[in-house]
Image (tube, rainbow, N blue to C red):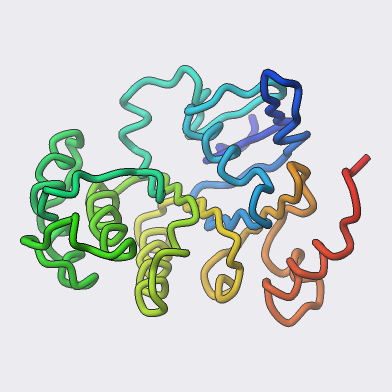
Length: 244
């Protein structure tokens, strides 16, 4: 019997009704407690891939399993073990941070109020801060608190690091890594900013124009380059058309 995988994709494809191909033959297997960085330029298909993982879109080809379930049909019990972080998540501007967290915690039996308070202190977010007056990065910190206080088994983050400042990005990545190493959480982080991820990610999936250019452990993707950012830039420069 094959070992369990947190995420498994086989010949995964997604095309629009118009026939335009967004993802073509994506193949990877991610073991539990891994930290995967999905990297690529804007429009590469990273968000579409995450939408497929979360069941927000339906694949048009291939097979996909997330936490041993098909994300198109899995029950709420499985979804409750997944935390989703994205710039696309809106929060009411007239709410205070505490109002949002009170609303959010009602959906999760595993929600940890003590962890919430610890995260609020660590991310320097006051409960009485009004969301409508916060910067984009500050609102994402509130979202991070709510998501991580559920102690999720799988954390899926879409481009959220782009709105965080230097220290906020480092703190966020450290929080993800801590949960991976101490609680066995699986991390899937999509970003077009690979700089600095070398210290956190152990797996890398590189996508360009919907095609998978590389997947594997970080050292294999680096392939002698000094950093992940250098390796990504080199592979993107070498990629001059759709793969055959």
